Amino acid sequence: MGIERTDKWLDEYFYDPLRICRQMRSSFKDKGESELYRYLLTFGMYRPSRMTNEIFHELKKSDSWTKVEKLYAEYHKKWNGPDIPVYIFPFGKKRASKSEMKGGVSFKDAMILFLSHYNNEEKELEALFVHEYHHVCRLNESHKPLKDYTLIDSLVMEGFAEHAVTTYCGDSYNANWVSRYSDEELRHYWERDVKKHLQAKRTDPIHDAILFGKFRYPDLLGYSLGYWLIKKASQKKHFSIQDTFSVKSEKLMDYMIP
Image (cartoon, rainbow, N blue to C red):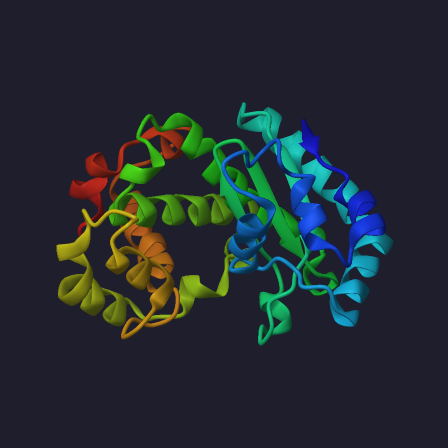
């Protein structure tokens, strides 16, 4: 599998994103193209416009597909990771700063990256790839159905993925949510709001409210907490890269509690 040549799809169907989503049917058999497109928009999928078309052509000019293909080959071998298709599209979220104009979403058997020419430097691409491919590896090592994932599972997932970025790319390439909140702020939210909801399933509204920072919770609180908790745990116990793919969330509790 590896890198799907979505640049060829975009050349032909840029202004018909539903047709683009139809091309991905082999990876998303349970979703129609309209449902898939709406879902991907929440993570950074482009909407056809002059701006996103310019981003697409800049990505082609800088040969982003080849760059990601090299990263895939490197980490697929280094981590003995699963063989999956990787889809690349222009980043399209509005009101994002230039440093935030990238994103991704990963599944057990596919990865989608949303890129822009503002974040196309090789180490920045590597940081995004490492984070998302770590998700793929951990999802493949887990025997728990996705519907049964809880808030603590999601915190650990995000924390370990960004811990891998620190390890392989350096902390200067961590996402900005890593340092968005102080130790005191995170401890406050952990004690007051989060500990009591750790077993909330993904279907429970409180799960996404904490993870993404909705309603009264600050932006990407769960992501920041996940990294903070894994950092605490790593100070007490060494985790190999293979450990970070397979260790169960519940087994980390003794190490994570600040």
